[in-house]
Amino acid sequence: MQALFIGHTYIDVTFLTDRMPTGDEKHVASAYAVSFGGNAITAAFCCAKLGLVPDLLTSVADDWLGRMFLDMAAKYAIPIHARKVSTSSLSFIMPNDGKRAIVRCRDDGYLHPFPVLHLAGCRALHLDGHQPDAAIHYAKLCRDEGILTSLDGGGLRSNTHDLLGFVDVAIVSELLCQQMDHEPPAMLDYLKSRGCRIGGVTLGERGLIWYDETGAVRTLPALAVPSDRVLDTSGAGDVFHGAYLHSYLTNPAMDWEGHFHFARAASAYKIQHLGNEAGLPTLAEVATVRRVFEAAA
Image 1 (tube, helix red, strand yellow):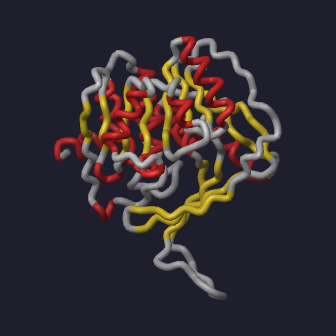
Image 2 (spheres, rainbow, N blue to C red):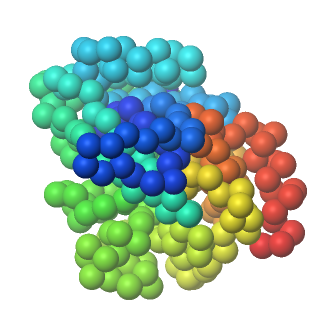
């Protein structure tokens, strides 16, 4: 095991439509994609597509959607440590003008305790706050073992405050800032107070505000992808997390500014493609995005 990602599995149905039907009418979408979904799950698939395959501890149901997810994971050779739920979770995602509306159908009633795994060889742990009991268990264990811990703080969860005490790299969303009544600079101060070595807030098309290894606050503008090429922003943050973890695992001596530049390019690739799987870049595609867009950043 080189890295462990912990999250909750969704099957994402992403579709493009010029309007939503109401009442008793029907309408045909112009395009659609069906893919794996979930924050840490998409990050894990991104890391695997880039060339470093992590293990994944996630929810799996014994139904046809669950079996479809296992087929998806097998395609990327991702080892799945399943935690059983009764029914697979779904997300219906409607991209529109650089934004996205999402309806989620979730079963997070875990039927068994989380599996206890041996972490021999593990160099990084990535969490999104789902499975809070497993998240805090493995975060503490990895902290004790000197294994890098990373958090996608997409929203406030029951154990966010406690979990952050065991997180080295915390990249959180504007939504979490709003939920905690913090402006982004105040959120950085909060992350520092919890002991996070690296912390940041993703700001969508406005980029990233973050602090580095010295505690200095920095900004990283988003790459200027033309609006007519922005197809689907859903999953861009998950790809960002998966990409910076790949960068860390393959080049741990590089500073975090370098890791985030790599991840920014991966996210810029994602938003130009519909659905999570189509939006996973290869190393060559990340390099192309950097060559085309970074000079203008």
